[in-house]
Image (cartoon, rainbow, N blue to C red; front, top):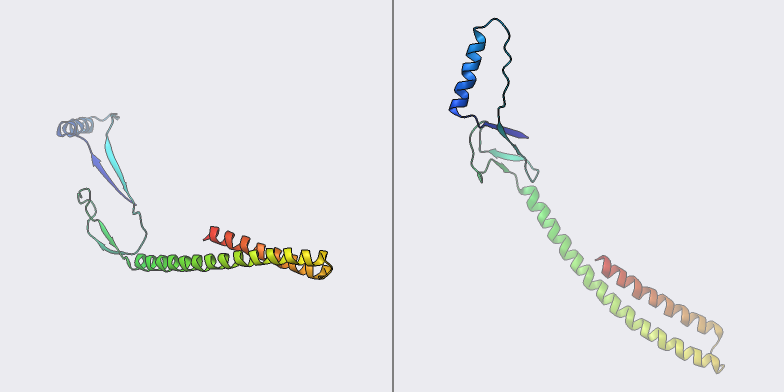
Length: 157
Protein backbone atom coordinates (compact mmCIF):
# COMPACT_ATOMS: atom_id res chain seq x y z
CA UNK A 1 0.00 0.00 0.00
CA UNK A 2 1.37 3.39 -0.97
CA UNK A 3 0.56 6.54 0.96
CA UNK A 4 1.03 10.08 -0.29
CA UNK A 5 1.01 12.88 2.25
CA UNK A 6 0.54 16.41 1.01
CA UNK A 7 0.78 19.39 3.33
CA UNK A 8 -1.90 22.04 3.31
CA UNK A 9 0.53 24.50 4.95
CA UNK A 10 0.61 27.99 3.40
CA UNK A 11 3.91 29.90 2.79
CA UNK A 12 2.98 32.16 5.73
CA UNK A 13 2.45 29.11 7.95
CA UNK A 14 5.78 27.62 6.86
CA UNK A 15 7.52 30.92 7.64
CA UNK A 16 5.85 31.02 11.05
CA UNK A 17 6.96 27.47 11.84
CA UNK A 18 10.52 28.29 10.74
CA UNK A 19 10.58 31.42 12.93
CA UNK A 20 9.42 29.43 15.95
CA UNK A 21 12.05 26.79 15.33
CA UNK A 22 14.85 29.35 14.93
CA UNK A 23 13.75 31.20 18.05
CA UNK A 24 13.84 27.97 19.99
CA UNK A 25 17.35 27.05 18.78
CA UNK A 26 19.08 30.10 20.32
CA UNK A 27 17.60 29.53 23.74
CA UNK A 28 19.17 26.97 26.07
CA UNK A 29 15.93 26.14 27.78
CA UNK A 30 13.66 23.51 26.20
CA UNK A 31 10.84 24.90 24.14
CA UNK A 32 7.88 22.69 23.23
CA UNK A 33 5.84 24.53 20.65
CA UNK A 34 2.40 23.09 19.99
CA UNK A 35 0.14 23.40 17.01
CA UNK A 36 -1.66 21.51 14.31
CA UNK A 37 -0.27 20.47 10.96
CA UNK A 38 -2.97 19.36 8.59
CA UNK A 39 -2.22 16.89 5.80
CA UNK A 40 -4.21 14.92 3.28
CA UNK A 41 -3.53 11.20 3.35
CA UNK A 42 -4.58 9.04 0.42
CA UNK A 43 -4.50 5.26 0.39
CA UNK A 44 -4.10 3.69 -3.01
CA UNK A 45 -5.15 0.08 -3.48
CA UNK A 46 -5.70 -2.05 -6.57
CA UNK A 47 -9.18 -3.41 -7.18
CA UNK A 48 -7.65 -6.45 -8.90
CA UNK A 49 -4.68 -8.54 -7.94
CA UNK A 50 -2.08 -9.55 -10.46
CA UNK A 51 1.51 -9.36 -11.60
CA UNK A 52 2.78 -5.83 -12.22
CA UNK A 53 4.17 -5.41 -15.73
CA UNK A 54 4.98 -1.71 -15.65
CA UNK A 55 5.13 1.11 -13.10
CA UNK A 56 4.35 4.49 -14.67
CA UNK A 57 4.75 6.81 -11.67
CA UNK A 58 7.78 7.36 -9.46
CA UNK A 59 7.62 7.70 -5.69
CA UNK A 60 6.72 11.27 -4.75
CA UNK A 61 5.74 12.20 -8.30
CA UNK A 62 2.52 14.19 -8.59
CA UNK A 63 -0.22 12.36 -10.45
CA UNK A 64 -3.66 13.39 -11.60
CA UNK A 65 -6.95 11.60 -11.18
CA UNK A 66 -7.34 9.04 -13.93
CA UNK A 67 -3.59 8.62 -14.56
CA UNK A 68 -2.41 5.05 -15.03
CA UNK A 69 0.00 4.30 -12.20
CA UNK A 70 0.72 0.63 -12.86
CA UNK A 71 -0.06 -1.87 -15.59
CA UNK A 72 -1.07 -5.39 -14.56
CA UNK A 73 -0.61 -8.58 -16.56
CA UNK A 74 -4.11 -9.38 -17.85
CA UNK A 75 -3.42 -12.89 -19.17
CA UNK A 76 -4.84 -14.52 -16.04
CA UNK A 77 -7.97 -12.36 -16.27
CA UNK A 78 -8.39 -13.31 -19.94
CA UNK A 79 -8.10 -17.01 -19.07
CA UNK A 80 -10.59 -16.65 -16.20
CA UNK A 81 -13.03 -14.89 -18.51
CA UNK A 82 -12.71 -17.71 -21.07
CA UNK A 83 -13.27 -20.30 -18.34
CA UNK A 84 -16.37 -18.44 -17.10
CA UNK A 85 -17.76 -18.33 -20.63
CA UNK A 86 -17.15 -22.08 -21.05
CA UNK A 87 -18.93 -22.71 -17.72
CA UNK A 88 -21.86 -20.57 -18.85
CA UNK A 89 -22.18 -22.53 -22.11
CA UNK A 90 -21.96 -25.82 -20.21
CA UNK A 91 -24.67 -24.82 -17.74
CA UNK A 92 -26.91 -23.68 -20.61
CA UNK A 93 -26.46 -27.09 -22.30
CA UNK A 94 -27.18 -28.91 -19.02
CA UNK A 95 -30.33 -26.85 -18.64
CA UNK A 96 -31.57 -27.88 -22.12
CA UNK A 97 -30.84 -31.56 -21.37
CA UNK A 98 -32.68 -31.30 -18.04
CA UNK A 99 -35.68 -29.61 -19.71
CA UNK A 100 -35.85 -32.50 -22.20
CA UNK A 101 -35.57 -35.04 -19.36
CA UNK A 102 -38.38 -33.25 -17.51
CA UNK A 103 -40.63 -33.33 -20.57
CA UNK A 104 -39.93 -37.05 -21.01
CA UNK A 105 -40.57 -37.77 -17.33
CA UNK A 106 -43.90 -35.90 -17.47
CA UNK A 107 -45.02 -37.98 -20.46
CA UNK A 108 -43.94 -41.18 -18.69
CA UNK A 109 -45.92 -40.06 -15.62
CA UNK A 110 -49.06 -39.57 -17.71
CA UNK A 111 -48.63 -43.07 -19.16
CA UNK A 112 -47.97 -44.55 -15.70
CA UNK A 113 -51.14 -42.92 -14.33
CA UNK A 114 -53.26 -44.29 -17.19
CA UNK A 115 -51.71 -47.74 -16.84
CA UNK A 116 -52.30 -47.74 -13.09
CA UNK A 117 -55.96 -46.82 -13.61
CA UNK A 118 -56.38 -49.68 -16.11
CA UNK A 119 -54.68 -52.21 -13.84
CA UNK A 120 -56.96 -51.16 -10.95
CA UNK A 121 -60.01 -51.82 -13.13
CA UNK A 122 -58.61 -55.16 -14.30
CA UNK A 123 -57.84 -56.20 -10.73
CA UNK A 124 -61.40 -55.34 -9.66
CA UNK A 125 -62.62 -57.59 -12.48
CA UNK A 126 -60.25 -60.37 -11.40
CA UNK A 127 -58.06 -60.13 -14.52
CA UNK A 128 -54.98 -58.62 -12.82
CA UNK A 129 -53.12 -59.69 -9.74
CA UNK A 130 -52.21 -57.62 -6.69
CA UNK A 131 -48.58 -58.04 -7.75
CA UNK A 132 -49.27 -56.37 -11.10
CA UNK A 133 -51.06 -53.51 -9.34
CA UNK A 134 -48.14 -53.03 -6.90
CA UNK A 135 -45.58 -53.03 -9.73
CA UNK A 136 -47.57 -50.50 -11.75
CA UNK A 137 -48.04 -48.25 -8.71
CA UNK A 138 -44.29 -48.42 -8.00
CA UNK A 139 -43.45 -47.52 -11.62
CA UNK A 140 -45.80 -44.55 -11.37
CA UNK A 141 -44.18 -43.41 -8.09
CA UNK A 142 -40.67 -43.73 -9.53
CA UNK A 143 -41.72 -41.69 -12.56
CA UNK A 144 -43.21 -39.01 -10.30
CA UNK A 145 -39.87 -38.87 -8.43
CA UNK A 146 -38.08 -38.42 -11.78
CA UNK A 147 -40.31 -35.44 -12.56
CA UNK A 148 -39.55 -33.95 -9.15
CA UNK A 149 -35.79 -34.54 -9.55
CA UNK A 150 -35.78 -32.87 -12.98
CA UNK A 151 -37.61 -29.87 -11.53
CA UNK A 152 -35.08 -29.56 -8.70
CA UNK A 153 -32.20 -29.86 -11.14
CA UNK A 154 -33.67 -27.07 -13.26
CA UNK A 155 -33.95 -24.91 -10.15
CA UNK A 156 -30.29 -25.61 -9.35
CA UNK A 157 -29.19 -24.68 -12.86
